[in-house]
Image (cartoon, rainbow, N blue to C red; front, side, top):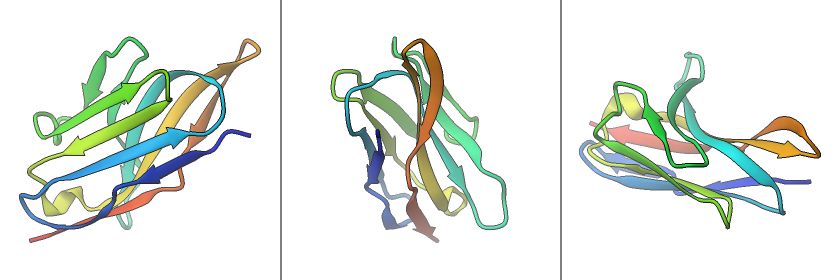
Length: 118
C-alpha cells in the first residue's frame, strides 16, 4: 500500500517562505502531482499541478510566488512558497495520480498546516 507523507508546514509571518514536500512510499508509476489547500470553512482548492513531463499550472493567486517541482525517480513533489500572505493559510494536501496494472487512481497526503500571520 502506497502512502504519501507530507512535511514542511508551519507558522510563518507575512512575507515569509515555506517549502512543503510530499514523498510516496513504495514503487508506483505517478503521472500528475498536485498541491491543494483548504482554509477553514472553505472548499478544498487546487494550488499547483505538475505533469510527469514537468508542465506546471498555478492558481492565479499564487502565480509568481509559489513553485511546484518534482522528482520522478523518488516520487517526491515539492511546493516552494514565497512572499506568503495570510490568505494562504490552510491545510495543504499533496495529490498524486497513478497507473497500476493499467488502471488509474489517486492518492492523497494527510495534510500539513500552513499558517501565515499578519
